[in-house]
Image 1 (cartoon, rainbow, N blue to C red):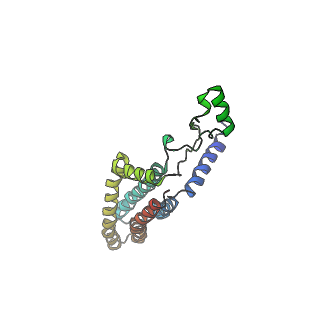
Image 2 (image 1 turned 60 degrees about the vertical axis):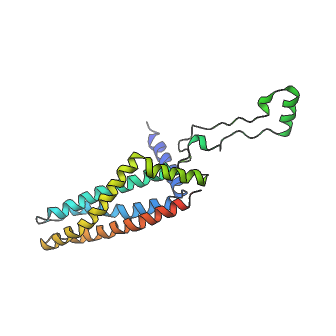
Image 3 (image 1 turned 90 degrees about the vertical axis):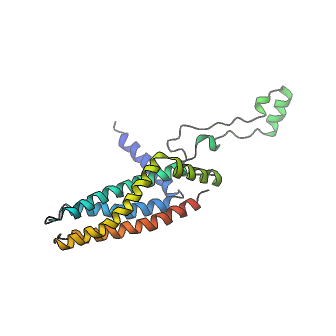
Length: 214
């Protein structure tokens, strides 16, 4: 029990290290950098006297929830695409037989020494979670994740709702100004700035990350 925090810290550090070396580092950075501030704005809104501007406050709360979904989806999609299944990698395969091994096998009639056995290490905690080694297979995973994964399909629907919610935020900001929201209009304005930046830069960074797959 005493060593659990250290083990958890080690797992997190290893995951962060692999993420930073991942082709999706740019996409994850953009997603985190543009979705965390709106969550902070929603928390800050609770400390402001809304003066009856409940619609503005509710918009910030829902927007924060959608931002958390964006972050979770980015981590999930990046991991699914960059993950290399065990049957697609032979990084831990045994080395090929040497010339002397082949000669000895030919004399002894032992064919097992002439053909190397492929073994995969299945005990790694982070099995190449953010590493890929074959561009064709990587693009195949991109297609499978974006077109056939049910979780991604749900997120696409939520993403469309997120875009609609940002456009609705313009009206909520005007309502907060009319009812004297005590600063809520500024929080909504800043949240909208981050939201529209994520819609544009998020798509661009994801495309760049896919192009960097190996």
